[in-house]
Length: 194
Image 1 (cartoon, rainbow, N blue to C red):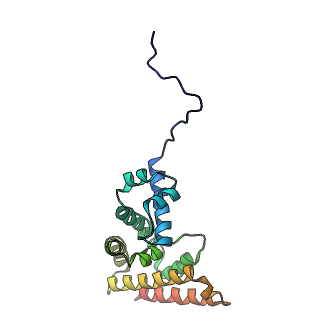
Image 2 (image 1 turned 30 degrees about the vertical axis):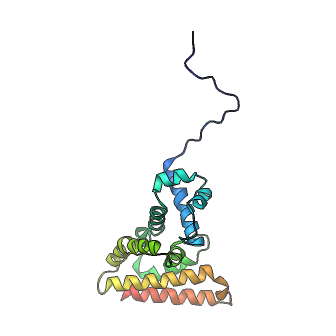
Image 3 (image 1 turned 120 degrees about the horizontal axis):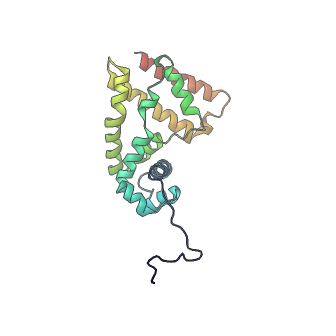
């Protein structure tokens, strides 16, 4: 009788089973890290795949292209609904506390700043902000001038995060970080309360 099954080879590796959801999340986190540290132009698919511990083929199977990965990573990093669940009265203070929490990785401001010199990334960033970020903030703020106020909050937030995260030594003087956080919180709250 002839066997139709192959005998197990000694020392043969069993192929890894991947959890698609976890792999996708790892790829997005790796992309956010790479795009926020290196910028769109310098972050390569192979680099991001290596950080995520997946093959570049698998990465491309999930996202199709570097541009699509950048867009998905930016959308994932800028989840507005969670942020807007907070009390309006303390929103500025909450935002300042959140941004100064060094245990949290806050990548969107760096991703945005480093995307501005690349036309493709700039177009993607503009679209993501226009479609996924501004509408929920605008709706949450309400009249008057909700869109302009949403943009003001974004401008303040991006600058605040960039300086406090990328250039923290500027605020190392005694109490400077607390004064800056208070100013930021009050500025954002004034926009919310307008």
